[in-house]
Image (cartoon, rainbow, N blue to C red; front, side, top):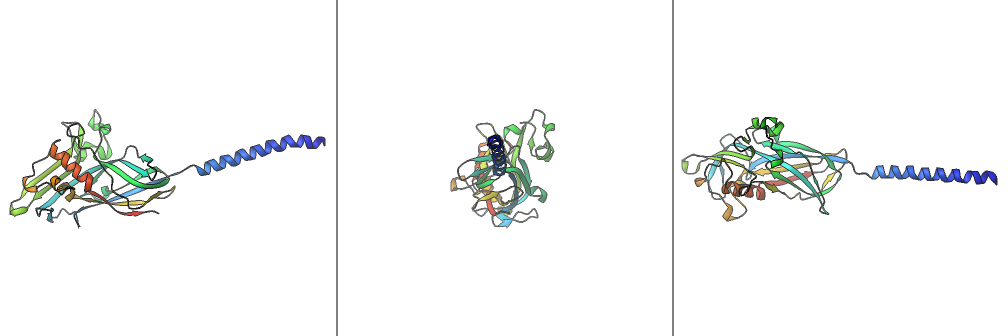
Length: 262
């Protein structure tokens, strides 16, 4: 009887310890991991792939043009779940240069595991990425990438250089969009529909294939937002027209062509 009384407290201690250990293992197993999401961007003009070989493209109004340069930033990537909760990937700034295939794909790491129904990103560079000394900027933000206005200490968000060819008389199209100060802030967010659920899991890398359409700059979402190439002025600084173009490409430039969950 005496031995049984001594064994009872020992049993309780062991049972409590076992329960605690099992609880710890359960909590550890239930903690969400992180995965990565890869992006690939195909630059197009309408239904055609963008080329720099003199191929002529047509706007909705029938004006034609050729493209010599097309570059832009994607930043501030955000992933949204069905319940409205979001994950904002920190310090993500990606320069997409249509002339450089290696720049048209990138990967966002450390995305919390979960089922995401939306994705969004800023087309451009927000003011938090600026520095007093531009030479301190590295990687895709480096001014050496020719996407920086030294006179305004700010990045060019999108750069299109093309030639209007309608009527046989060639005229240059210079479109450098930037600026994050009112009243001509060109900071815009694109939120292309995923058309599915992005499944982020530890050790997996789902892929989002984006299409970026140059025509969206000129062929806006409504007739009032269409921009004629015949009267296109040179855009080299923040302006009302630059803001309109930014709104145009925020509304229609990006489309999710495919979503591949591994």
